[in-house]
Length: 108
Image 1 (spheres, one colour):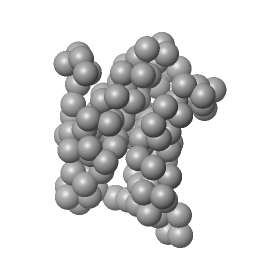
Image 2 (cartoon, one colour):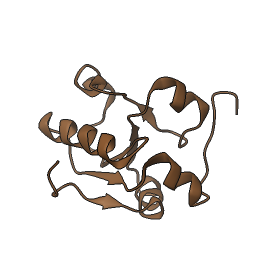
Image 3 (tube, helix red, strand yellow):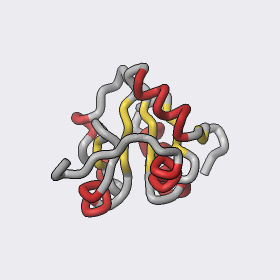
């Protein structure tokens, strides 16, 4: 993956979300349902190329995955499709949880 896609800490991601960025979670739907960042959009695998109308062109996109590698792949796909700017949460969803940042589930 190109090193032009910045990796950011969970705290930096939280600040970007507060400034109107959109979190794109590339994990599988069952993982996303079990715990996610509030307001995140679940676009696993290559779903982004089929669901472009759900993604605003005027917002920064912050990608989150089970790990940094998958999130980087999603961010690169977004750039290829004309979205940007993009960044990736370093360490994935577990780093978000480990940082003590808020999450929600489908029941909560």
